[in-house]
Structures are given as C-alpha cells and as structure tokens.
Length: 574
Image 1 (tube, rainbow, N blue to C red):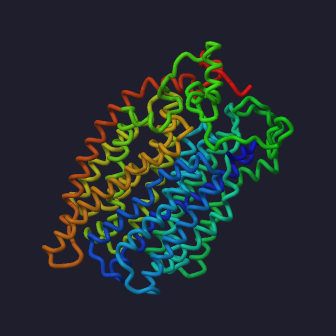
Image 2: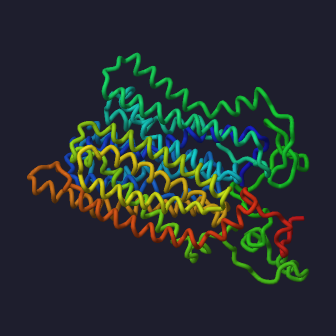
Image 3: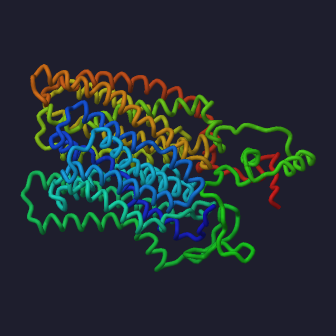
C-alpha cells in the first residue's frame, strides 16, 4: 500500500526526476566503453568477452522480481534496491579493472556484471510503472519520452567518460558504483504514484511537447559535441562548459512543475475516482484524511471491475456469497484484451507470445550488434568506436521517442495498432543487416544509424502495447517478462553465434583480433533471417489486435471503462 499524491504538479515533478533516473538506468549501455579494458587488462578472449556481454544483458533485463515488487512496495524502495545493486556490482568490477584486487575469478566477474546491470531493471521498472500509471491516457507518449532518455543515456555517459573521466575505464566503473546510488537517494522520494486527471487537459499536450523538444535538443547536442571532440582539440574549459550545458538540458523537464508553481491553475479537474481536486499540492480530502492509500498499480480499465473483484484477495467468501445471492455475480469471467490480466491468464493468450516473439526478433538481433559494436567497427576499419556508440545512442533515442509519438498519433487518429511500426522497422532491419554483411566502404555509419532507429522503436512500441492489451494492474511483470527477449537474443545470437564466428575468423588470421567483413558476415545473415520471421509474426499480431484498438480508441482517445459499463459490477466496499 502506498500514498497517492493528488494535484496537477506532482506527476510532472516525478516525470522530471524520472528523466535523470532513466539516464541512470541506462548504465548497461556502458559495456562497450569498458569492455576493451576487461579484455586487455584481464586477458580475456572474444568469446569470454561476449559471454560477459550476455551477463550485461541478462542483468539489465531480468526484471521479474522488480515487476512483482512494484505491486507491493512504493517506488522509493525499488529505487533503493537498484542503488544497492549498482554499488555492489560495479564496485566488484572496479576492484578487478583497477587491479585493486588481483585475480578475481571469471565467474565472480560474470555475476558481478549481472548484479550491476540488474540495477537498470529496478530503476527502469520503478520509473516506468509509476509514470505509466500517473499518465494512463498518454501511455505511448510517456513510454516514448522515458525510453527515449534511456536511449540517450549511452551518449550522456560517453560525454562524461571523455570529459570528466578522461577515457578511464576504472574511473567510469567507480563513477557508476558511487554516482548512481547517490542520484537514487536524492531523487527517490520525487518519483511517487499520483492521482491523475480522468480527462485530457490541453496544457498536458503542451507540456509533453516541451519535454520531447528538450530531449531532441539534448540528443542533437550530445551528438554534435561528441563529433566535435573527435575531430577538434578542445580545451579543458570548453569541454567542461559542454558538460555543464548537458546538465542544464537534463534539468529542462523540471521547468514544467516550476512553471505550475509560479503560475498555478485555478480550474478544477476530476481525479480518476471522480473526486474534484485542484492544482499544485492539494491532497485528496476523504473522511478527513489528507492522503488516500491505494496499491501502486490499480486497474486501468475500471476501479471496481468484476474481473478484479474475483481476483482480489481482500474479498471474503461471505462477500462473494452475498453477491451471488443478490444476483450480481453469476460466474467467473476471464478478462478480455484491453482489461486487466493476471500474469497466469496472459500466459495462455496467443497475443502475449506473439508480442514477445516479435519483440525478441527486434531487440534480440539489435542487442547483438550493440554488444559487439566496438569489434564490428574495428573489423571494418573504424579507429574510434566511441563515435559509433554515440551515433547508435542518438539514433536509438530518435527511434524510442519517435516510435512513441508517431504510434500515439496514428492510434488515436486512425486506430492503427502500434505493432505495425514494429513490422515496418523490422523490414528495414533485414536490409540493414545485409548492408552490414556486405562490408561496403562508407556504409558502416549509415547502417549503424538506421539500426539504432529501428532498434529504439521496438522498445517504445512494446511498452504501451503490453499495457493496452493486458492492463496496468500487473504491467510491471508483463513489461519485464517481455524484456527477457533482450538477454535471450544476446545469449543465442551474441554469445553462441557472434563470439564463436569472430574467434574462428581471428584464428584463421592467426591473431587475437579479427579484421575484415568475414568477422561478422555469417552473424548478420542469421540476424536478417530472424527479423524476416519477426516481420511475419508482427503482421499476424497486428491483424489480430486491430479490433482491440478500434474498441479502445474509438473516440480518438484511450477509453477508460466506467463503472456503468459492466452490467455485473458490484462494489462490496460500500
């Protein structure tokens, strides 16, 4: 049970703080920045390094526990657990890379990396679940913004790595070990579940546009400064000025609650339960209590939905018998798509597994390239792979932000299922992998940019789609289960395929490192085939869920079920 904060300002304070925490949750993207040190300092071969990349992805995406915990504990508890994992995991890696402790076993480093990057799952789940609930009518937009900033995190860390940490892997690991916990402790009480308005506010759209514009400016700025730092010799003062400007751009989303404080709105809105509340910090008035206690995730379709009634642990057998005697309850009805599902109920739905497989094809193949991006760049003649990482990060951000925004527009105006954009992008990914496999001169950066955009779209589409099909009540579990497609793809395509192919080609060249397009050609051809399968499955899924979206967005906005929409509803709490 957690406290619901009422008013128009708290959700925006939480969203602004969540931007920073989402950047922190992107710490797993740093693996290419220090992977070369793991290989050179600790003497690992490419296969061992690739398996560490798998550990990186397993930790980042194993979020079933955070998904369960977010229904039982407030967000600050989830964030605190993530902070501890970051401190412990990256601390062990720092001890190894800095040679503070000699000869740490490989298995311990593998586990430490899993624990370190698992902080991403805890942080990401806390901010995403909380904000999706705080803005239930703008799920695609919120998912796009948060996942967009998550995509920018690699570029943010690259900026810090180059300017503040002077390209030192050991300093980066210490920064992650100490910096992320400090940030979580400072901001953990700002991210809290709030009572959102039940109707759409015209100023809400303006606020979202402002945050999207600020994120685009930040993305362009990060890419520009990274390129300038690569081609020009910048003084220390100029470099630190770049860093300060980056921090100011990250603060930009907090301008919205500041503006709402200085220029408060006097009109009243209706909360999710139909109670009037004003702007700023006014709390719900209920029976003399200033706060209303409810679970972190309540049903998105209805507050007293019959399906939730049957599943509620708080409803006694006596209540059920009384309900049956009054004729209010006749038989247990399974939820329909668009309503709140229990996890076990979703597992038997074909749409659930289709969404998982489509997501697996997109992100599982994309993360293989991301984990091996440094080696791919070196194999194809790139001398500084940080440019590749920054380019991929920026385009990943564009895909995440754009995927959420574009899908939100078309789902409201044309009731087109969001998954159609996964279909389009995976078709593009097929040709992108073939372009990588060709090894043509001058195509490396273009292919990396296109892949980054398509890879980002997969995230911002999966998140709102899962919540729309299966509800927000157990969204944390659904989201994190879907996210397992990422480490599963890394294990199969990166750990069991790319690493072996690379080492085999390097052995033919009688070298530790491999050079030339043959190093990853077979891998790229397999990835193209995986995306072809994903495209077919995505078409099937889009066709199946088209009627659901026509029902949910029939009037041009997301339809929250009201109490009188279910003929067999009964509120036993009255």
